[in-house]
Image 1: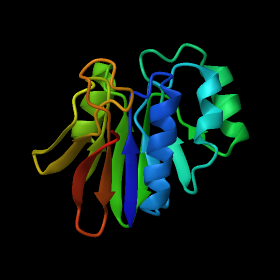
Image 2: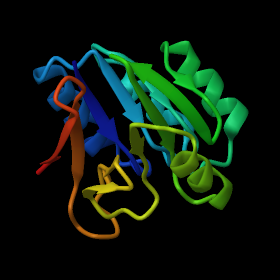
Image 3: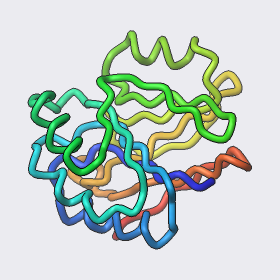
Length: 164
């Protein structure tokens, strides 16, 4: 299965739309969002996504209940600051990465893959046998690079994709 990975959209509706188009083109069946949607109005821009979306909050998400409601209205699950996703026999930790307790939990919880955001820096690496993926910032506000990532669960392999 190919999973789409996104983080740090920060209200950039144009890049959200590009990401959704790219995820739909690649026919992903699941997208994981590692936080920082920011405002509730962003939910409508994920509506055309032809895949299940599971996400967590980031440090800039202030309206938690309203975000849960508007994203829930379009079928998206926002699961707090940390969640576990089981896919194809893999245990994936999904977190934003700004809270030490979440990072500690991810690295000590027997996870196969960690998907995180917060730094706005796209990276793929392995730490203590765990594949760690940060899709970077979809918004492009901090680094200037607008990126998402993909994860092939069968090969346990991830790659980055620019939105520009």
